Amino acid sequence: MSARLVVLVSGSGTNLQALMDAAADDAYGARIVAVGADRDGIEGLARARRAGLPTFVAKVGDHPARSGWDHALCAAIADHRPDLVVSAGFMKILGPEVLGAFTVVNTHPALLPAFPGAHAVPDALAYGVRVTGCTVHLVDAGVDTGPVIAQEAVPVYEADDEGALHERIKTVERRLLVEVVGRMAREGWTVTGRHVRLGAAERSSQSQPPGGAGTPDRLDTGRSTK
Image 1 (tube, rainbow, N blue to C red):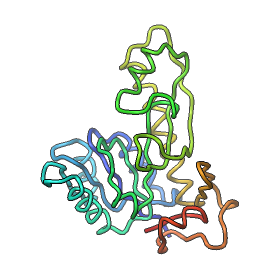
Image 2: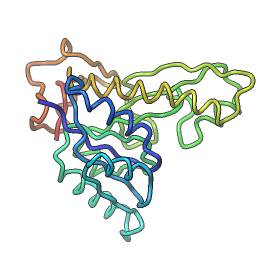
Image 3: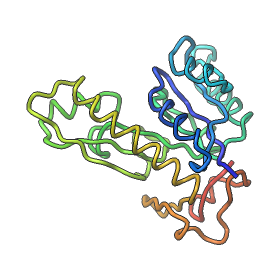
Image 4: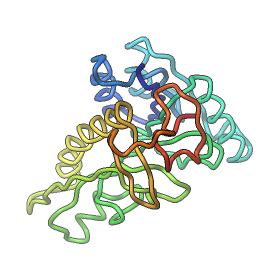
């Protein structure tokens, strides 16, 4: 049984496209059941609609309080019963209701904990580092502070400007995200403190198959599905 993915986007959806391409192969072990966004009129939603995927939009500005948006987004995600939520260029900080209900995976264009936040690439260039990279991590209540799942280094060249470096990072980021989400779907994961381990060999007898019921407490015993 394939794991069910809800993917959240805010822009062009290149990470979404990489996941869509991978999920077209049944052996990948996961399928995208819906794509959500925080705004209308973006290419990420257009990609999803061209592929015949259900979409939804939850705008922060439609709610007088951030908690109302958190509740609405949580309900919209829950309608599609995901095993995993993937933040693929989603540029809003997720609230406690969403994070309490779902396991969320995110990517970041730096080797966390270095250079968190929205300006990771120019921050790395300004600092003068010789190596940066990308991180795939679980999302928690902080900004790019969740447990690291996987990382890959990307060299910084003398001639790099922000655009050139970011494009090189994105190439690695797309591949790493696809690899990590596929392994989580097929093999499960465990979390002990800040350490995330992927692979069936690490799963306990209590871990859940794709599509099974679960709670955030089960993060320490295998795949967590809500």
